[in-house]
Image 1: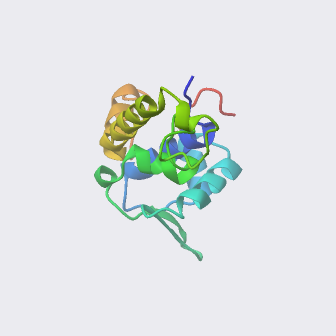
Image 2: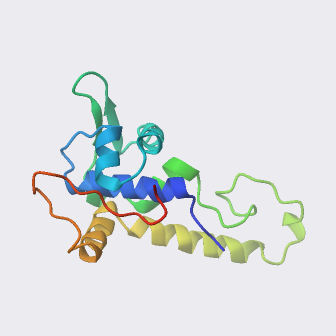
Length: 159
């Protein structure tokens, strides 16, 4: 099974929440309140994402994190790469950086590269804005934006 880590999944959740009001500056406790993630987890992911070109951090009393690009200009592939590194289905694809002991004689060498390119292209096509639209459709009855008191998203398996 090809599966993203929980940290990457949570990173997309955090970025999706930030994309709802892209001009807003959020702290780790803010992110925790809106997503249901523990504050230490939110803080760790925000620190990692702040090293990317799409999220900036500001220090000080009014500091926090803010998107530096529009949600439509941030691909899901970029978020995954910021947390996990390059997307590579096997060690013999160009993005992997790993060495394969049988690479020279492997009959699947070109096939995996084709699959890896298709996977990366699919992830590049989906933007953060697309994910927010899909999430809003799924959660249309669960959240009440601008109701004064934020209600956290319910994430299965997160305590």
